[in-house]
Each structure stands twice: as structure tokens, then as C-alpha cells.
Image (tube, rainbow, N blue to C red; front, side, top):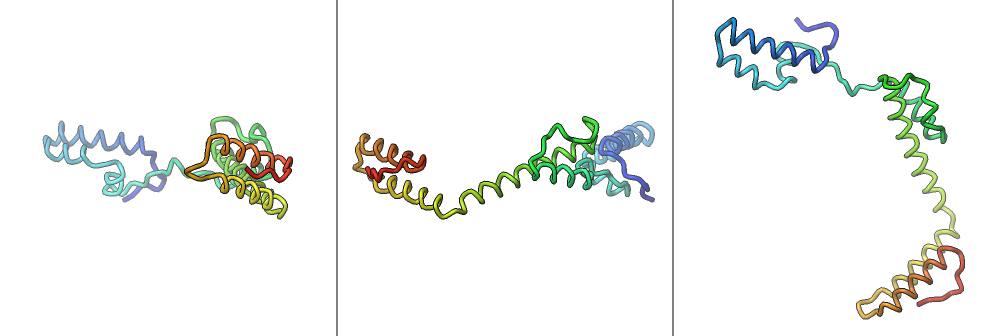
Length: 160
């Protein structure tokens, strides 16, 4: 019959180690003890019908709160949970994900304007026109300078 509450990986490993010693020293069956010892922890738990706790399972409410704080531009120091707790870890994990999502969304919005897309297209045209196997170093430097000027808004239509 399986345990009602889950055991940690370390607890199951401890049980497995005791089973190896018991089988070898008390039962007197070193071959069977070696078989148990070679079995991985997950297989041992399954065979013994033990439930292993998932140490990576996160508190979903804490994660969501952290995600929302990160997406809203909050500060990591605003974590409401005590340091080094499972809830704090879940909150910070969510915070990082929320911050990343907000960053991707903001970057995409910035490029949505037609004017910015036109500037990038112009700089790309300048660089592509200069990119050729026969291009001299001076020509490439001039093209890069012109593309940077276009991107900075100092475009005087100086194609290299």
C-alpha cells in the first residue's frame, strides 16, 4: 500500500539504502542487494508504490503574483514572501518570466511604427549596397557610418 503523503527524493533514497543493507546483511542475499542498489530512485519508488514529492512544483498563486509584478514593471525587492522559502522562489521565478514577457512586448511595440521600420529599411539598403566581395575597407566603413547616421536620425541620404 502506497504512502498517503509524498516523500522527498532524499527520503526515498534513504529507504532504498536501508533496503540494500537489510537485504545484504540480514537476508544474506548480496545479489538481490546489488539489484536494488543498481535500481534508480524513481524505479524503486514505483516498485515500492511510494509517491515522490516533486521538488520543482511551485506555488502557482505566488508564481502568478510574481509574474504580474514583473510584467507591470515592479521591482524584485517587492517580493512579499520571506527569503529562501518555496513561495519566494516561485514568486521570483514568475517575476523573471513576467519581466521577460514585458520586455518582448515593449520591443515589439517599438518596432510597430512605420517610420521606424522605414529607418531600419533605409539603413539595411545602405549596408546591402556596400556589401560585396570587391568592396574596399574604406567603402565598408563609409557605408557603416551612413547606416549609423540613418539609425540615429542624422540621415543626409549619404549612401556609400
